[in-house]
Length: 232
Image (cartoon, rainbow, N blue to C red; front, side, top):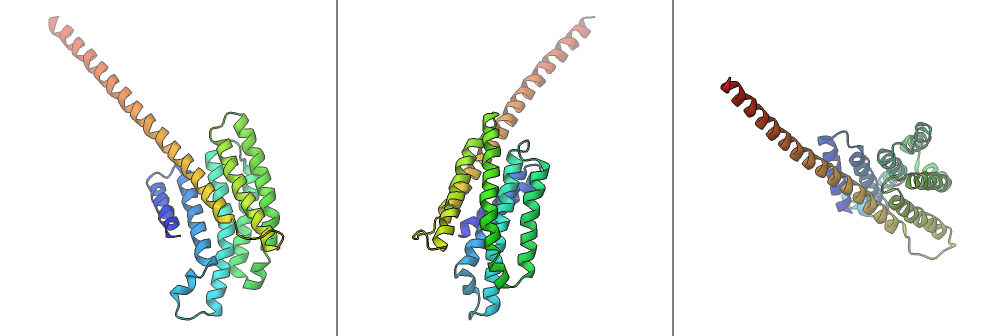
């Protein structure tokens, strides 16, 4: 799981060097949320303490549920930064408000009521996914790059989430599939960021070459004018 922390810090540092690239910020926060969830949902957190305690368990439950809403928060932020024309103001306010409100509640509540917030997540995820998929389909038909690629990632993630919900209710047998859905989502996010960075580099390279040609052209022009001036 530590590779997730490295990826998170790497992209957050990249964002600090180029603050207009919001995609790297949201991707870094998404990786950080997944790292926190992986750390708190297993026994890793207890390795840092000599003996288990109620307080450590409480922190574990809090961070586990906090990271779920943090992950959705960051994922939507990434979508909005990648497709700003598709995800409008009111949808952004709706998604960010619900997730931020739930995160604040989780921070101040006890473990027992925190566990009950899974009902909210079970309702919110299908609604959120449906809206996102419809928006991305519209974006794809409008010619937006990578929209259909991200639909695949969202479908994997949502499918894995629904599968795990059914496993929790003893409707389907194990194993849990959410880790595969998360890996797929991270892969497609990485692909979009890498593609965007490659495009930016090619554009900068082309502009550099064009600028060099323009400078040489202007230099020749000035030299010609200077020679004409000397012959006068």
